[in-house]
Amino acid sequence: MRQILKDNRICAIMRNIPIEKTLDYAIAAYRGGIRMFEIAMNSEDAVKQIELMRNHFEEQIYVGAGTVITKERCQAAKAAGAQFFLTPSVSLYTLEFCRSYQIPLLPGVLTPTDVAVCLEYGYPVMKLFPAGDMPPSYIRSLKGPFDETEYVAVGGVNAGNVGTFLKQGFIAVGMGSSLLPKEYIRNNDWDKASEYIKAIVERI
Image (cartoon, rainbow, N blue to C red; front, side, top):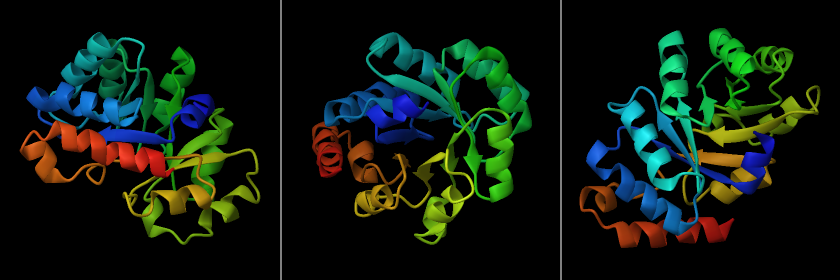
């Protein structure tokens, strides 16, 4: 997981993207320089979207499943071909499932207790959520006692502050609705979308 994130500083979080716009959205992001995608499992047609993107891009990108917090979602995401899992919080079932099947996992944490639990299961790279609600020094405070850990900022990250999060010490960021202006998606302005994302990628 650490290596994937060092090579991909932005993960595009796709939640509630219409199935008919899935590939257009992903291709626009790909052309903008993004190679890491999360499909939120609480979205309609999430399983179909994972399968669609894996079949279209094959090994050109990483496709993960997000919000994987139940047994059913773990099994469905694995069957769909998700290459990594993400959670918004510490889910013991998901930690055990991913460890059993050797699936890269980015577990969501907020507190020192959350961090300690993830380390017990062998996951030193975590998602701090909601990162935007925490003080700028919070990640440094966590890394004091947990110096072997790395964090991805999710929640509150946008085109204007993405660099700030990286300077705070985050290894990468996840961007959902803030990755693209909604009107680009609504109006199918995929060329504009690619240029918009390209500017963010170049900035970092």
